[in-house]
Length: 245
Image (cartoon, rainbow, N blue to C red; front, top):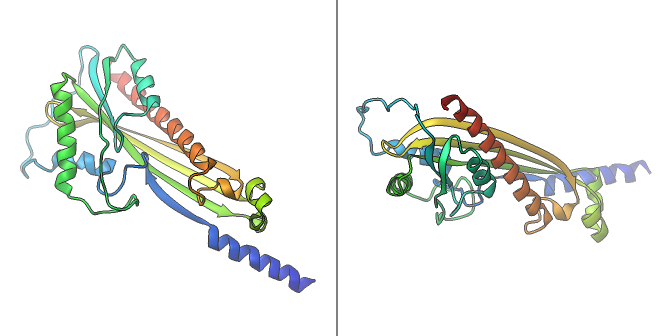
């Protein structure tokens, strides 16, 4: 009996190691490789000479500003971001979504490095040029990263059955989303205000709904959590902007 128990425990441990894992994506599924938030922000400086130009003018808006909003990897910013900012009429007379999608990077990994740094710089400079041509004063550029970890439990042995895989909450899923944004002065292409937010979520799900099984209900939950993270970033941005108005 004891040997059977030991074999069962060993089987559970082997199963846990074989199916547990984690992965990292951008705040958008298309935010990957060199085309990530940090590199786009650094791209603002890539064409500046080693001798720094004079310091940017002090950010002291005398009236509500015209704001462009762009999410790394997306053709349109998240509705959660746009809805939140459009409510702030005392700060923004206009809130316009700008495209930052269409980014092609080989592979699906967040860490792929197959692209040109010049391409990244050109993309953020072009974004500012579009905003300037549209008569906007500033651009709020945002992105981030999302880390998802899925861990098997003792109940994972039941995943070997069809009913267990669909019904038994045998997986621990941990989601950690770091969202970040920067307010960019359209005229001199310089960052003005930096803001960040962190969102964590923990859940127990059946194996079929865990991140290890793509295209399932867990992906729907992931999108929902990302929307929450974006809304939190919008709130942080609004709170930080209040000191200037």
